[in-house]
Amino acid sequence: MHSLWRTLDRGTLRDIALVCLADAMVGAAFGAIAVSGGLPAWVPVVMSLLVFAGGAQFAAVGVVLSGGAPIAAVAAGLVLNARLLPFGFAIGDALGGRWWTRLTGAHLMTDEAVAFVLRDGDPRRRHAAFWACGLGLYVSWNVAVVLGALAGRGIGDTGALGLDAAFPAVLLALVLPSLTERNARTATLRRACLLGAVVAVAATPFLPAGLPVLLALTGLVLAIRAPADAEVSCP
Amino acid sequence: MPLIAVLALAAGTYAVRLAGPALRHRIRLPGRLRHLLSVAATVLLIALVAASALTEGHGFAGWARPAGVLVAGILTLRKAPFPLIVVLAAATTAVLRLLGVP
Image (cartoon, rainbow over all chains, first blue to last red):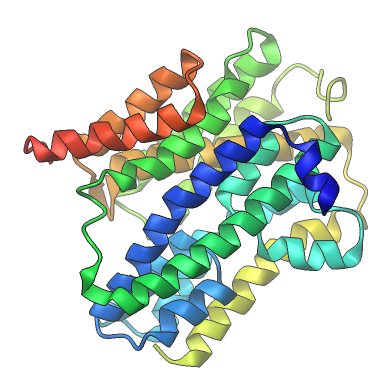
């Protein structure tokens, strides 16, 4: 674990700390919303520890608070989390080779951790970035949810602080640099991303939450037909 | 929300998370498919950015949030430091809302 901090440069650790801070504010809001909506405090706290997926947690609590059945809440959360399946295949190497690092690391896999891993091609730094972001977010998110649940209605409006823009901004800042290189491979990746994003946004009015983002995988048709240079620079 | 529902969501989520790390060593994926999976991860993240920037529920999120995310995109292309990108994105959205932009 000691080498984890030496492998990452100061800049990456600072970036991860900032993401933890931003997510902690959202976590506090989650705890507060759940409790002030009438749920007992253990629900957001236990859910955060065991589910540890912000989007799914908001979706599940939202369904329950609006009078939906618990089974509908579970379904909404699971559909939202389905994207974690391809993530696991894409960045599974970053968790480490031992069985127990895979078992524990899997629980720490989030959009943010995946984005930090994708930012780097070096296996050691990918590994370190995954664990630093995973552990950092797990601790900060759960502590924040407890504080939010205790504070209840006392938490301010995260919308007024613009925190809802912070999540897409974080992901964009992490992923966009990998899309700016000038070569045929990156041009294909850009087109696949663009098509995927358009499909996801266009499908949002018609499909349950979570499915539109999965439909973005249709963007891959542009990558399948790409020139056969796929073997060359795979990390 | 009953405990069993929380546990079901937790178990399902963990299974989805574990499948990749647990299975990717047992099945030998061709290089082309491995490449496609890393493309898939990037495509999903960008779709998540677009959907969470532009939509709320089944409708439009309003102008303040996508404006903040647009600022983040421009600053990223200009190679601004990461904290500045995130803080200015949130600040743009917050200021626009303060001015009455939805």
